[in-house]
Image 1 (cartoon, rainbow, N blue to C red):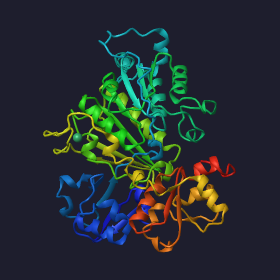
Image 2: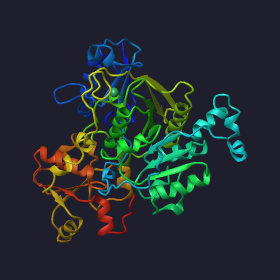
Image 3: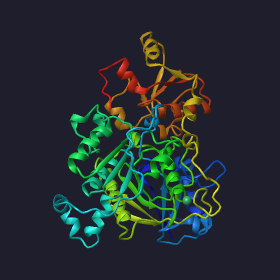
Image 4: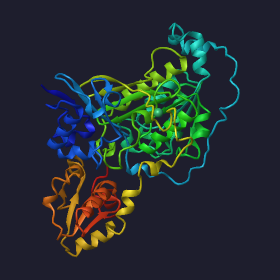
Length: 495
Ligand SMILES: [Zn+2]
């Protein structure tokens, strides 16, 4: 007998690229044990140090969460499919560097009593005619949309199709939260922006584009970092929140604020070729914490900046979120409440899993212990890793001096091979971070090691790991190869 195990893209670098594995185990626990022993790297992703399945990993037997079956003791039969579904953030750990200034501005006074149903102008009749002839929307539905207020958190890959389609559909007020500036590397997927917008604040460019697309729509830019201080105020002004974030702290914050304020949260996340979509509405179903009680430790789940993302993927996932948002606003159709939709662009497959309300959920369960917002950076362990390597860092300038003096240094590049190919430091040895544990034998504790990655985040984790493994003479290149090309060698391409 054999059971098929589906491995998500985020973990495939630990299974030699395999998307499916087979196992002879008779229980879920036995299958997982077998995977952990045949693929050493998977072990720390799947299990905590005391051998429990980690909370940010959901294990599904066919379409059921094993937590609601018999957990690890759940029997498996030939032909069953076991899926590992980890939480994915879809962002750049480096980009979690939030600006410290977070004063709320650009708010639009969208609160107050709802206005009575509006009459559509002849221009609006024409603009929305394809909606008006749909019985599921019609005149009353279009009025509803025009009176609706949607908050989109994140104006990036997911936020782009979301904002474009919701504005085109005539959602009356679109709040957008972001504080980023348009960068050339955004244009491969963030279709809200054009080449002329490079260097402009995203919300400024977005507002211009959306206003051109549909002057009916009031765009409310909130050029702030969503934080525990402002989230409740912001979210309370809108009917629906759409999660287009790229990092775990903001994702949990969006979830918690929407649960506390009893608002629907239309969730989407992406990684490489894979996406997840759901609608969390704690009044009717589970919340994000019911699915993933806690985030992965920083660095364990690769980010889009490390793994990349197919340009079209956020277009598909963001468009699905836009569909769900319109259905929620119209009160029509079967939304994804209680269901998690998985999309795999490589195999071109959609799968659907049940998500149940977790009776022990700290936030939306009957015995909820969390009554307010918390410190999400601390909850997600952000900043801890880098703190611990302070004292084991080197500046690009210092490294340059040492290399110029001919000091014997071993440069260790912990990025992915594709990144190495774009640019690397001369003589560097490529050991991608995920394979560091297996390839430790290639390094010597007697050598002076300088570890680098793109921005310094992954290499900080690698440095911490090497220190734990007894390497004393190891240092992390501050700012990564990006700082090196900016300050030392501009001939190295930046990406
Ligand atoms: Zn919950």
